[in-house]
Image (cartoon, rainbow, N blue to C red; front, side):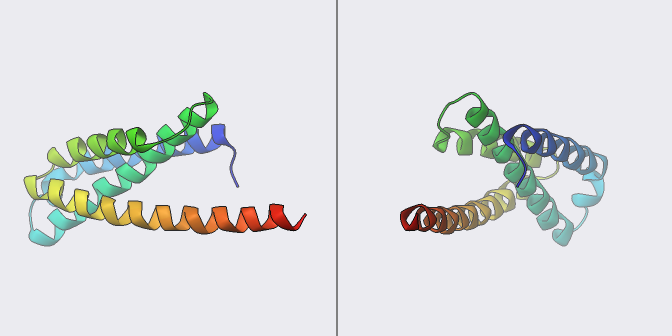
Length: 121
């Protein structure tokens, strides 16, 4: 597993690449219904990497990550989606909610596994 610093760097670089590509192809993403939905999904990936960046930044500063990080990451992703098409805002929000649900579920599974390992020793 990557450390906090390297994960923060990778997520920032991924954010930059995804946002740049989205802005380069925003005309294509706004051209059809399918591509508009795809634009919302791409913006939700921006949500995922920005949430990773913010969470790692807060962890490296010694702060606890909470819902504030989710709100900030979602706002950034929705603003990026708004530069493509209005429908991308809605689809980005829906895809981001799904990703957040899955991240929360995965986090709970990982936490329960780590707690069971510490109880055995």
